[in-house]
Image (cartoon, rainbow, N blue to C red; front, side, top):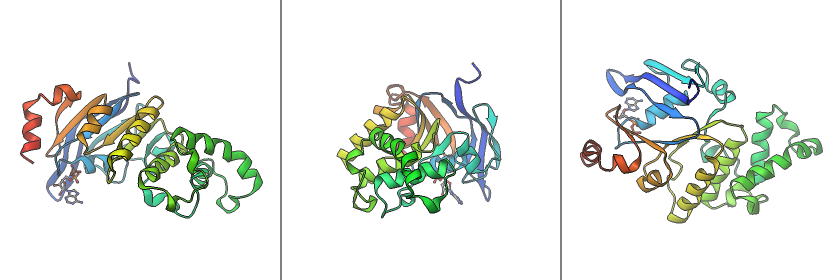
Length: 248
Ligand code: ADP
């Protein structure tokens, strides 16, 4: 089936002054899957992620999203097609409430002028959807809390809500569990699982128990290349994968 894979790369390569951070990577992300990209430090995960989100330009290769070649497309145009990277917390406005943050994201997506962001029309138009999105990520009780006063894990959930406001079909999550304690990890894992019913997800994640619990499929990178691909049970028995992690 032509659209079985929502995102595909072929020959994806990034060279920094003669050093191949990513080399000839063929990645296929199946629609509806949670797909994890893992590998020891220096394996090329971040570089790969930055190529997919268009923050870096590949030295060679192709990226196709929904059958369309997006290799040379600008990040904003890619986002408009529904392939969206989750924002970093720094993109959340600290002094706006959770509700206002999501509403501003919705306004941006729908081209509504930023200057009038508190007008009655705007509130009537965007508040219902903003509340819905906060509810989807389990943040209803924080609707009127300024982002700056929210606990770290909840802020990450808010970051995901502002990403969902962009109406994605596929989300790219960069270490969604970074810097979190157990409780927050469990909550964000449950959230990712929940939203994966609607969206395809590709994530880079260091926490292997999270990867084991969440992923439908895992691609292991080492030295910029794909070493192995499969589910966690298979990969954890793979000698090459064990060696790559031990040798790191
Ligand atoms: P990972 O995210 O898996 O830890 P990275 O993608 O950050 O790996 O890095 C892969 C390799 O590419 C590393 O050896 C790193 O030093 C190198 N690298 C990454 N970015 C650059 C850059 N801008 N210039 C030169 N080398 C880089």
